[in-house]
Length: 272
Image (cartoon, rainbow, N blue to C red):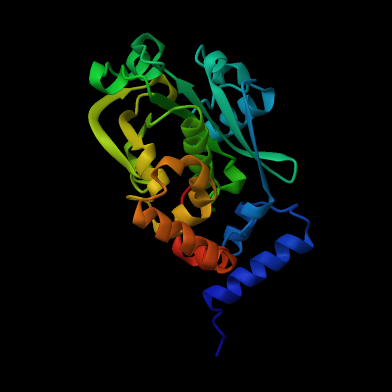
């Protein structure tokens, strides 16, 4: 009888192969072999920049084409728009390769700065015209590095970057199939839809993420919060440090941090 590998054994094999090949093989190869993606978050470098680089545009194009869009062009300039100049770009780099990127745009209470209002659907002033609203968009992962934890890490870093600079609410848009990814991250789907040219006719919905809930771990899976958000909590939530639940969570994370990464491999929902 053929032996069946346990999930733990499959993960250890994937991790060993990743290390032995010095990261030269992508997540896609592991999935094709019936193995999980290796756990590489401790190797990921995060960069925040105001400069839109050609590598970000190239990543956007590759991600779009993998989703069946922009198939008639290889011109990366098709992936640039007027909002890029005012945005901050968050990059995830794995072994010198850009594997995920997104941007955040601070509206400063001005609806005329909003991409969603301009391109997708007009939003009420009480949603978009308050001072602490930040838009998140152009979130993408390299087609060869999907179905791991990179997207969750990217969302967490976008949230933290926005929070550091005074943002308290993230607004974004996505096709309906991707909305659950944001909902799992303290998000909600708002009752507004439209058709963004980016998605070539597919209907998009508006999602909103409460950054204070993210920092407190509300409506965020605990292990996701612990791995991606907790390292920032002490600095972010200092005025609220007397909150009992926050202190319990933070202290608990310090105690169990050595085993969190191992448990996380099997607990967090896998996303694109």
